[in-house]
Length: 254
Image 1 (cartoon, rainbow, N blue to C red):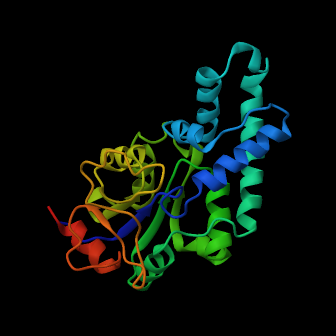
Image 2: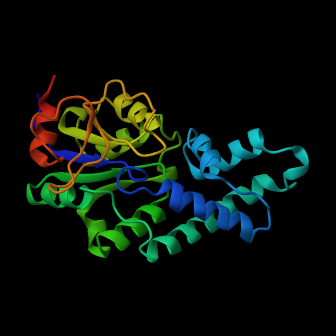
């Protein structure tokens, strides 16, 4: 077994609960700005999360949720503009501090840096969304902590395809045996396992019923010393929160 060298993080739902109260709200603000009359409820957005990528999600909504008379004639040209507006609204939400990191995320990242692990991002969200989240939670200097930020349209096939992880590892000159992934959804674990990565799952409200077969462990959160995690699948031993020691142990398991 190769030594563990790098932590590869998904963003939305993994680093922060961005979906329900971040991206969904920003989409609705963009729809309002363009006078579309569309509104994505919490339940509707949960269904739309089966599609990865914001532009792809809107196209799926148009194709499967709307009647012909509810679709603007220029929708194909409008979707990229809507996505830009949504990104603007999302970064504005982040700037208010409305979307904090999930429990244990900052602690684990700081510990990984102290132990000289290499860090990377592998996500379907846009690079602007990633940098905005990092800036408003960990500080602007944190962007440089991540050797690679593989995000958005940098690869043609988004999750559940493994391409984004393959891209990150290629840029870092690392093999899957030298890395571990952190994910929160079925599309995420399909992507990471497709790239032959061992994967740690922290669920959220939208993904608690997903199939995480093959995950190294499934947790409700990374946890803190005073806020222990719950183990939903797998073995954490006597650990009460996710730290580098537990990550290393999970990586070494056959």
